[in-house]
Amino acid sequence: MDLPIIFALMSGIIIIVLVYFVFRRLPSGNVNESEEEPERKAAAGVGRGSRARMRAAAVQQRQEVEEDEDGEHEKIGAKKRAKLEAKAEKKAQREAEEREREEKKKKKEQLEEDRKRQEEKEKLEEERREEEERKAKEEQERREHEEYLKMKAAFSIEEEGFDESEMEANSNLLLDFITYIQDTKVINLEDLAARFKMKTQSVIDRIQHLQNEGRLTGVIDDRGKFIYISQSELESIAKFVKQRGRVSIVELVENSQRLINLNPKVPVEG
Image (tube, rainbow, N blue to C red):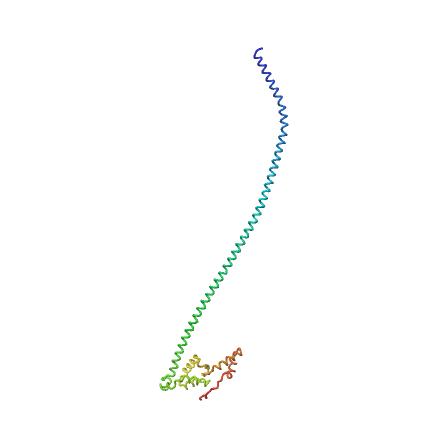
């Protein structure tokens, strides 16, 4: 046989054998794959279940941890809140005490200021009163000096007609003047002026001067008479008014003759 024919036959046989083996292996492979598929699915299912359980366990554990953390946070938060509240309360108490101290301090300062102001007011009032008293004293001294000059002029030679020898002989004329009024009790001022050779106005001025000095007490009525009232009689009147509490002018006049002795000690010249 020719070589080409031989090579063609050999090639055909090889191809047939190869096809045989190929078709022989194909069914076996499908069966294996079918058998392995449930196993793979079962394994996959088992894997998925395990992973699900693991995930659930992890979630539960995480929740438990979170709950524990929340509980701890709540405990820490409550302690912190209580601490902050206590701190705020102490701060409020300190501020209240500070305000109270400040108010007491202001009140004390105000009282001290009021006291100083009152002292200053009293000092100024005292100075004003002393100044008024000084001026009043100076005015009183001035009036007394003027009255003294008037009295001296009333006894002078030119006005009363006394010569120098008569003035020297009557050095106690003023004492006689006072004694005569006291003994007469009720005396007409014109008669008194005529007796001592004085002007009526000079007599009035002299009586007022003696009253200011406290050497003579009494009143000049609207009839031009001087009524002498002794110190003991003044005390009787004061006692009467004090006992009655309130006394009218009518009551005082009605009881004046009992309280005041108007009878002269010496005969009154007609």
